Length: 121
Image (cartoon, rainbow, N blue to C red):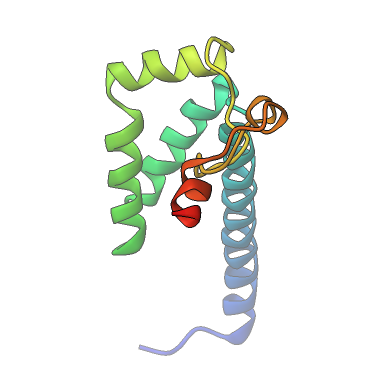
């Protein structure tokens, strides 16, 4: 069996690799958009993250672990209810992602956080 000429390789590989590159860029952009949406607690962000979590299941081993955790956290019905409550504005949005620190109301009233109290002791 003879190998294929170089022209066949280039006419086949260039469009294929371009398509794969575009898919990777679209997935990365969707990931950034989903992250922004989650930080802003947008209603559409949960669905987008679930889709991206499902797609990441195919990236063994780290994507699989991240995809399973994403689906485990965001897929149950109770998670849907909690996220809808958060995104509708019923719950105050946190200032810090980790939830550590004081809100502007606490700092204006002169309250100290538990971290500050522990340091004073």
